[in-house]
Image (tube, rainbow, N blue to C red; front, side, top):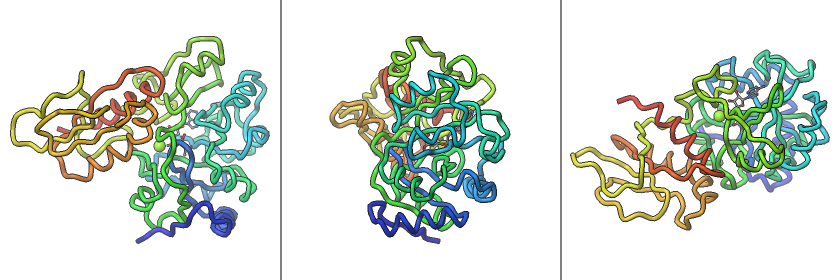
Length: 325
Ligand code: TXA
Ligand code: MG
């Protein structure tokens, strides 16, 4: 069934969306990273519907979205001065902080943990929606569990249809990768690389930051090996591609930059301009287009693992871990 999609710039649509949330409904909304599937974070029944719609395991906690950093103590205990500093520096923006939670927050939001993931998204429509709803929004990425995250309203409508009460269309996501998750619950550790480069966080904290590996207990199921997977088997190459492997299989290429590679059934170039920001913003849509072509295999070129390139390689490796061959 088709989703109800309205423009995020329309004030009536915004009021409509806020009313849906206040009634315990679900609204998909744009953020600068990816589209989120939002519910009132203080309404446990509404949050339960998110898990149903996404077919998401209940051990996977949700990120709580605020309109402004000043609302932080609604949901978290911000007694760590580093949290206050990072919030002032990087919010609104693609950073999620894992902090001690407030007990008033329903357990279903945090999967029973004594911490909560919080962020202030930078998309003006997201902040306007949260402000209009008058409550923080619990929101995972608006995709079925384990699949590539949506970076346009059309992706959300395709994936979730009328299982969501309303989709606000705020255009394609500017960053295109999910937020970087930093835990300050104990010693600082990055739980998921993402749209805020690790180097910027390290500079702000004056220390180098460990990144929790997929082998460790998944504190964030964003850390699960086979996550963000395409349905088509995907392999990450060690270097740029020259030509498709011989044989009659239909192979697609995900190229980082313009390429002369021959023999591929389809080619997606992530960054025609060579900029890593462009590659990040186009990554999920390109994966989705290749995945829709009925290819036998997708080969993905690697990129340099610095800045946003770190998160791009992280997502490609996780997609590759879903290979069923
Ligand atoms: O950019 C983003 O972060 C997007 C947009 C919508 O804000 N959201 C997003 O949510 O990617 P989701 O649910 O797809 O991924 C959130 C990750 C999950 O892997 C979850 O386990 C982790 O955040 N997380 C949330 N709360 C946590 C907590 N208290 N401790 C550890 N991990 C947490
Ligand atoms: Mg997700």
